[in-house]
Structures are given as structure tokens and as C-alpha cells.
Amino acid sequence: MSRSLASQIQDVLPKTSDTYYKLILTVGPARAGKTAAISELAATHKWPRVNVNLSLAERLLALTHRQRAVRAAGILDDIVSAKNSSVVLLDNIELLFATELAQDPLKLLQSLSRNRTIVAAWPGDFEGANLTYAAPGHPEARRYLTPQAVIVKAGEADRPDNGLPREETK
Image 1 (cartoon, one colour):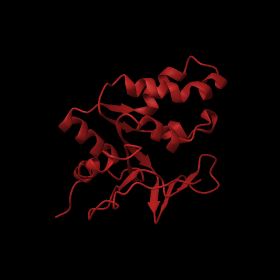
Image 2 (spheres, rainbow, N blue to C red):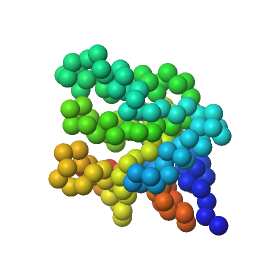
Image 3 (cartoon, one colour):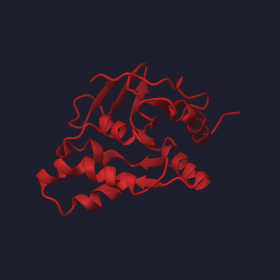
Image 4 (cartoon, rainbow, N blue to C red):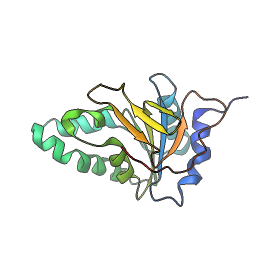
């Protein structure tokens, strides 16, 4: 019998307790079950769930184009910190990849996970040791070799990745 994605995420949570970054990325394409798993964890454990696209966009609207790029990371940190929880679930993170915000999404998520566990739904793929977002050549495309995060692949019923933190290069 296959384990649910929410169960797989919950199973790897202890692996972040002694790591520099307490980051779990649930990786998979659209409609792979990432949002359902995050919603289940939020309901079961009463952990806060943040729709990053909505929450961040609301706060960026009043800013100029230049201010958005400069302040996006700080605003997201404020949003997450305001949840006052040891575990925060992040969903719909596509805005972090927007070229006009000039952010490195993985580094941003890692910085958020220094003082709390972050579980983020990563809309991309993880194959071998490569974490990707968007197709090569796409303006928002990202590729990280062995990212320093615990990876749980959505849509894989057998088991998550070994859960070892990974070093990143770009």
C-alpha cells in the first residue's frame, strides 16, 4: 500500500532537526498532489499554510518595480515570521521565480528555514541530483545541482528521496 505524500513529508521532518537549513521541498509538476498534502498537514497539525503568490503579491502591489526586487525577501520573511510557528508550509511559490523580483528562490527558502522548518511545494522536478524549475531556455528556469534541502518527490508512492541534506551549486 502506498503512503500519502503528507505522510512522506511528516516522515522526513525529523531529518531537518540537526541540519543548517530546516528545509523540505515537495517537488513535482502541477496536479501532483503537493497542495493537497500541504493542506492535509496544515489541517492535521495546525501548522500555518502560506499561499506565497497571494500573500507576497498583496504586499508588493504598492511598491515600485525597483522596490519590489529590493524588498521581496524581507517581506516574505515578515510573512513567515508573523506565523510564529516552528513549522510553516509554503504553497504556490511561483512568484519567487519572477525575473522582475531578481531572487534566487532556493536561497530565499533556505534563509527562511534557518530558524524554523519550512515545507515548500516546489513546482518542478528532481532527477538524479538536479532540482529544476521550468524548461531550459525559459526566462525563469532554474537548475540546482544537489540542493541543500530534504527532497520529497510528489507522485512517487514508494518512498521519498533518502532525505539527506544536499549541497547546492548553480
